[in-house]
Image (cartoon, rainbow, N blue to C red):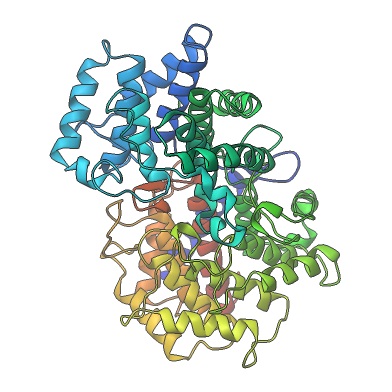
Length: 568
């Protein structure tokens, strides 16, 4: 397609997308997304309400059961996100447990098909903990839910050691976001499973500390991590244990608050702080966001949501931002993103929030130069060093003028990215599937620090160009679902290539822009794909991640084209 013709189409697409985005802005200036509904969260929510009051919550439970039956896929399984391809043995096992306990007769056909799917996909060996040694993480909680619902012997549960709360914080915190579920289920097991004299004594000592720890990380809305899945685990565990009534009721209250009208629950309530920052990043490609009246409230909202006190349970200092309120935890990714957009919104370097945020990021850097999300210097689960997070921090600190001289925090971060880059030029990101996100972010970080000609940047650029699909989008190949190009990955790659100096009239760039324009829907937005990654067996979709990054990619292309060809 001719670049000028595509410009006209892209401008119209961007106008529709900007209108859509402002239409979704809340009165306080922020945005809230829609995370995909989740089979695991819905199963746990349904089981919790059913055990709490099967008569009083009958309509709620029936709604959840209807959602589960309606979203069972033709192959008998449930997917990780809504009904997206593919079905997952782990998600199917949770859906099966809920239907088995709540509605075994009317759901007989669904249960039979779910069992067949699990058998056909070697679920007993694929799902952690069903056979063999299980990791002490939430995926191993599935066998515990099966034990609670009578699908296996009650004593056949992977050990969730409540005694973990007794060890030094620097050790127990390494499991970070899994710790609430481990402690909740550990309290239950300490009360209900056979233990030797030493374990019984340690359990009695650990239980009140574990319950107090859970109270400390709970939000005012009863949630922990803004996660219905965690609320379900905690409720079911403490109800079975018969302790922690206040936490039990708080978790139940949170589940009642967060159930959707269609009967389902999302894996997390939302990512409101994250997507508000992403929205500013997108709009900043089109307008002076610092002087836009509609964004004055946004700036103040972001400033209000900074953590001005330590998150003591994890030894996290004051100054960070979380992903949502009120029970999201301060973490590196969103602190970096928010700091970057505060600069765009005109907040000066001398502002106390900016100074505190910069110092927070510097204190959270790992010894190897990288950044994780919550806990420094760990390599367990989601809190291992992340290329995407590290690159975002580099972009934020560079935005505020921090030096990248040898030995500096930025230089060490860039060296980490270079050293961990694969031989083909790509790099994985912990929080998004496959390698497009991490590689794009690496390229942006090197360009931002005037290293766009470095071998690491050149090889990242080459990998992105080589992995553009025939239809113009990204990725060309994938290991995790979904199939085909996605709005998210196409936008990340397009933006990074343009930032790195790609010709806006080059054939690869034009095909990417055309893909985004062609895939915008009648509402002015893009279909989200389950590229967000909590674990390999738990992906999610997020409508505003797809929307904001697609809009940002179009905006950067229009700006680059206008700069090189004369502004229209």
